[in-house]
Image (tube, rainbow, N blue to C red; front, side, top):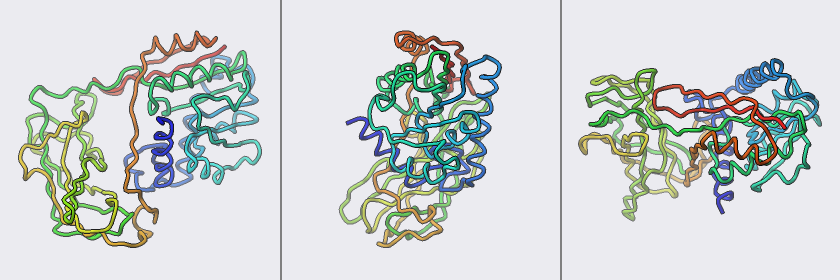
Length: 364
């Protein structure tokens, strides 16, 4: 059941905005990635891995590589510059379909759908390299650990498994009295087609006493949720979708202006769209009722225009991306139990209280 839900989420991401789902730069959301820039970013990531491989003499051979959670092939394509044969696997059919369309290396690069909690489609000792980045944190730990053990199993002796997995979740650094935000809009009435998204101009003001956002000295971020109130049935769909506040840091009294895009509800009709601010623990941070945005929206039947979300029909059930962490000692124990050895584990943290990222380099 869990893997089916995971597949549904990531298949929707792939159908709607695959490149952003793979490499989630805020400026690239809503299909704003340029294909060449997207795949060039993968070349840079693999280039850094290649530097480690050259410096450490692993893997001993560069014949075969496996890219786990390959998405549309951003890293798989780049790995073809370093290995004779590359295989990308993903749980989402929409991702695999597009990866095959983007493939520039013919039979040297193949993509396979993997819907199981293991890598049983591959024999043991099949790959010189197993690579995955920004994948395992989106999978419940009991499944992620199973995949890590499988990385070791399918690795050749003298091979290298490189994977990234957070070891500590973000704790953030919210002040004791919390943060406060107010939202305003000049929109009076909006119309959208079912299956598209509607753009709402928003002004967000920091009405509290502490900075809001993330930097080297501030880690008190906020997000905005949208909710749909069906005026015909009275039903309210809470937390239909969200976006992070788009500014690095908003000082007390400062205002930022941006465009919030809300995917349409399940069916056409007359609605009220509500936008409300919250911290990253989903605790509301608005002070008064007037600090949230309410806009009447008419949702009409029809096909989304090409200017909205690349002409792609959006699902009413919004996909969710999970965030998990696994303690480093648990990962190391799993690797060793599977017959592997951690050559190096590098821990890094971008901000005080942010996620602790751990990069593992494993051999057998």
